[in-house]
Length: 81
Image (tube, rainbow, N blue to C red; front, side, top):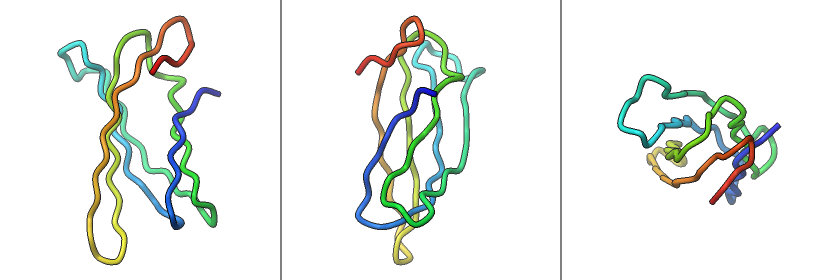
């Protein structure tokens, strides 16, 4: 399974939005991922087709909301950064 990995300083539950950068959002993917007791969040990207994508993460910690964005590429089932 292909994943994007993000390290946090605490266990966290994130809302992840995977958005293709081809101008249409018909193939946007949304999911919630819980790190459980770990500080590592792994977002599966097996459903992302070839092309450039942006991942947007949202999470709450101590009653404050945080956001993170990162662009990545997929080509022939390989992750490109």
